[in-house]
Length: 115
Image (tube, rainbow, N blue to C red):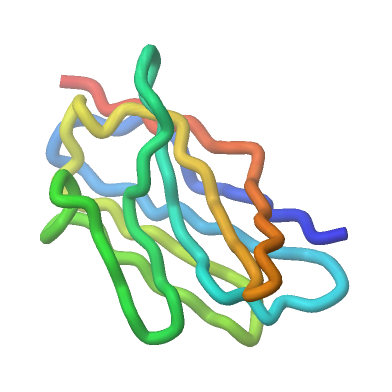
């Protein structure tokens, strides 16, 4: 049973930074894609950033401000968030999948950016 556990969320002022971390536990890692999604109140969950193999993708909203990194051996993925804005307020979810199609989600961590 694979579990993804996020940490690092919290309250920060606009312009500040936060670093989210996600650690996997379970039998084996061997994830294909690891990513961060977010869901703001009243909105659909959206992709923030993902690493699939050596390919990194960012949403246009966070490009240039957020940096995703991954340690495949340890089953961890991090998200460094800089120049945060109130529009970044959301619950952030860690995601991982395997080539078999199996998907995993973390429980989410709240990020609140005050103006």
